[in-house]
Length: 258
Ligand SMILES: Nc1ncnc2c1ncn2[C@@H]1O[C@H](COP(=O)(O)OP(=O)(O)O)[C@@H](O)[C@H]1O
Ligand SMILES: [Mg+2]
Image (tube, rainbow, N blue to C red; front, side, top):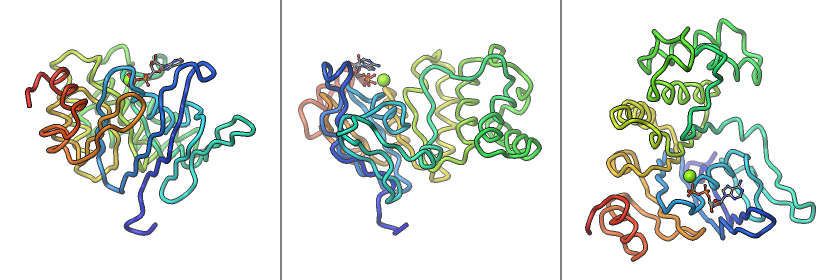
């Protein structure tokens, strides 16, 4: 990969639900460089989750394309009304959702080794060793044999992050991962994400947490009405937005008067 080439290049992404009845993405163009940490903010229902789900191949698109590290990744073949996706690339993207998605009948260690064993045929011993070292790093070593129901919400989210890391992602997507947590559990999850940031993991983060957005973002994108309204460094987009719509949103959601 050429140093200056983008990690992700989304071009004119269009997406609707219900046979075109609800247009959610109306031409999204986002270019993300390697090592960038992109925070996406915007009103509820604005398509942030849809955008991340498209990145994970969980949603079809109507038109547009995404390249990943210069390779075609997602494209729409309009004649067949089908979205084409490179499954190898998809495996190099990890995602954590707002609601924990751990398998309840598997213990934490089993949750972590499942994908690498299935997808990569990784030997059990090696997958378990990697899992234990990740759990150690996230302060969860003592929970390896516990079941999800025995963990706090914050611990579950940290496990979900560790599980995504088991496939050595080249990009991590976080969709409001602390929104469902009790306030006192938020920082332990944000701390783990900031640890990943310190190791230069590229990430796209949807959050309503202003403190977190300011501290983690190398760039902030304000999405509303299915388009990118404003895109720039956090000091600008969060601190002195150029667009009236961004200013109004930040005042309302973050209670900060500009
Ligand atoms: N599976 C779906 N079927 C129909 N409509 C959907 C579906 N998922 C999301 N939507 C609609 O698409 C819009 C964008 O949703 P979403 O991407 O979840 O926005 P955000 O994450 O910014 O709140 C909303 O109006 C939502 O109701
Ligand atoms: Mg959402």
